[in-house]
Amino acid sequence: MNILVTGGAGYIGSHTCVALLEAGHSVIIADNLCNSKVETIERIMHIAKKEVTFYKIDVTDLKAVDDIFKNHIIDGVIHFAGHKAVGESVDKPQDYYYNNLVSTMVLTRACLKYNVYKFIFSSSATVYGDNKVPFEETMELLPTSNPYGETKAMSERILTDITNAYPAFSISLLRYFNPVGAHESGLIGEAPNGIPNNLMPYVTQVARGKLEKLRVFGNDYRTIDGTGVRDYIHVVDLAEGHVAALENLTAGVHIYNLGTGKGTSVLELVKAFEEANEIEIPYEIVERRPGDIAECYADALKAKRELGWTARRDIITMCRDAWQFEKNYK
Image 1 (cartoon, rainbow, N blue to C red):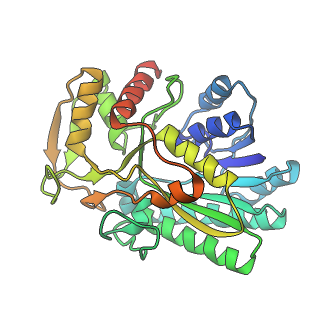
Image 2 (image 1 turned 120 degrees about the vertical axis):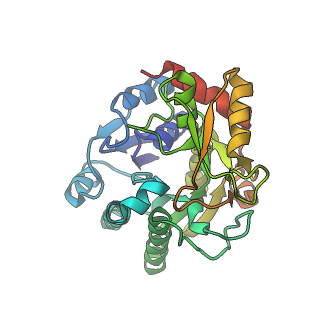
Image 3 (image 1 turned 90 degrees about the vertical axis):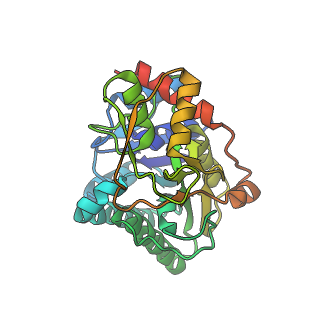
């Protein structure tokens, strides 16, 4: 299939492009490079030993998106493009609502216009809010804690309503948890512009000496050690989950958690990183971050049952691969 990947130069998008190419699909990338670099496109092609087509556009731009659909035969869309930091969304809600919702509406409009009926949406476990863990796909959406989660829940509702109106439309809503790690080549990984919002790149930058110490947001949660618990999943496992969702997509709306089903605390992750790479990570405890919840991990059985997909890489591999990328990254 010929797949349009929005945000394909980003962290999860780039790994998914590699997985798509290795599975025999063709890839068109649309990315405005606001939180990624054009060199990533070259690295994707180097790893997969295949060409991709790249458009530097913002997918909130209706005309630019329409031109891509007009110039290519597209079989499906995987939509990653969007702002993604929980804390930042609390400070910049207008940016998040505009970018994340308009991009979804622009893409679906183009899909319907050009008869493209396969759509994979990059959703998030944040839509579950304060539901009881482990999170199951049938739970009510409670994304009340931050605008980022709200935009994901709203996009899910938009896509569901479109599918109800156009029964041929096939949508997979992938709610994934906390991607970490990097491609085993060390060529692509998580490389945010500026100070990282996510835990693992912050840890790797502390390890490298770019940052002095890790800030741990809160140690008074009701968890194993007081720090936040998350379901960390290797980004390559996550990428393979997108390919499985695409290749098993049928008409209607399908919802899947992509996670390991196991929670790991912040301090447990720090210890795993130290063990995997024999590097000490200095840290300090600071106040809780707005919008964060105590625990977040998946019930991932549905994806295993219906897609034949399961996360295979452990936390030590995630830490080792993340550090390998950080050492290689210029």
